Length: 161
Image (cartoon, rainbow, N blue to C red; front, side, top):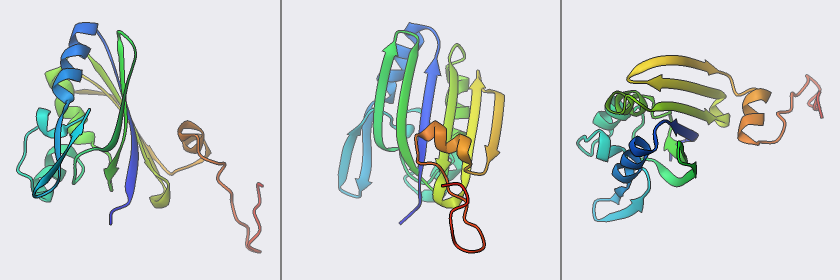
């Protein structure tokens, strides 16, 4: 079983471009050789690859499709997805798709507290605006709404309860 990275992808821009992206994003993702599931975010619809782990990692940045996808359209110029990916953020997917939607800005937050990393990427028209990878610190825990991270002293007691 993989470690599951949690992801938040927020896309902003003109309503018509968001409508197009949201419609194209919907699809069937394979769960096994003979079973698929409807999803609001299907990487393969934008960046088609052989259903092999190596090609998916190279094209998307993660070995499988997004899992547990929740889509939200809070207003006409914002579209947001929260989902899980295996081991790593789908950064290659976000970079490639942003080139196809040059009027949209893509912001990806991703984290795996168990592996102690937090990642942020902002891209527009295939160009990186900002990128940062840090440890999973209190700022990351606040973003994800996780409990405060406790530091443990040499005596095994929490130093910031």
